[in-house]
View 1 (spheres, rainbow, N blue to C red):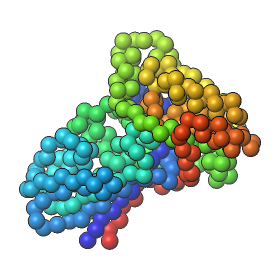
View 2: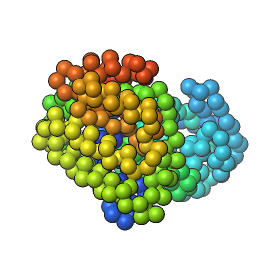
View 3: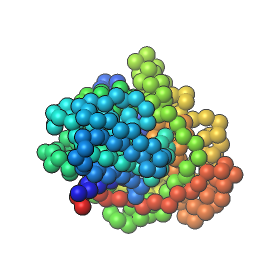
Amino acid sequence: MIIRSKAPLRLGLAGGGTDVSPYSDIYGGAILNATVDMFAYTTIEPTDDGKVVFIAPDKHLTEEYSNATEVDTDGYFILHKGVYNRIVRQFTHHPLSMRIASFVDVPAGSGMGTSSTLVVSILGAYVEWLKLPLGEYDIARLAYEIERVDLGLAGGKQDQYAATFGGFNFMEFKDDNVIVNPLRIRQRYQDELCHNLLLYYTDTSHVSADIIKEQQQNVKAKNNSSIESMHKLKEQAIQMKEALLKGDIDHIGEILDFGWRYKKQMAKSISNPRIDAIYEAARNAGASGGKISGAGGGGFMFFYCPGLTRHSVADALMQFGGIVHRYEFTTEGLKAWTN
């Protein structure tokens, strides 16, 4: 028997950062994101030798434990171990015997929610294997708790819910409550957005936790500029929702540009001279707006290219050595199945 799962990565179109505590606890946050056809994959192969083997086939890494009710959370497999420990502690109450392998379509630190999506994928495989009575909200919440509480990793709440639910979602955050509002966007609007939204990998990565910690400290210190920027990004999420639902797709570039100007004020490390140069080159080539995906500092960026400007923007970005990525939006979230 082999159990497999996959969960989609996401583009954070608007409101990024307002899902992070303490801002979301004090003021309430709003995010609009959409999943794309890049995934985190997990495979579980049950065994009877009493061993737990964690495998990263793309990195050629393996770690093995015997009869473990809890494993240390050091090293490369910190996310896998965090999920294993919670599953044993909360559900099975005894060691598991298996081989578990996972990989992601994009590099870590790319700004597509890779870590949280991987946790959701791993959880999905356990839910399928052990027949755990968990719905979508349960899985997303559990993934959040494993990352933010059990492992103490800094970050927001949107990625776990995006990976679990999939599609275009407007999400609202207040204290511990998360409400996912799926958006019924006409297919032709989605197609137009995908056609005009160019996805570009900067060929650099970032440590999102460091940027998020700076953002959190700015809120705790009552930094007015940072907090006001987050208020504006919350407004941006509402603007983006209205544009998508009404089909005002060409207005999205301006909404992205509006958000990017304020996002850079949330924390100093969100942008840098290279990112600013990439953004200006895209704008000069015809893009009406864009942003960096995720917390900032590196990874993926995307730009809205109206009319026939997509190719001129792509040409302008070649000087920076990154890669333009093909993608499609997806309508489904986490999937798991047994062979």
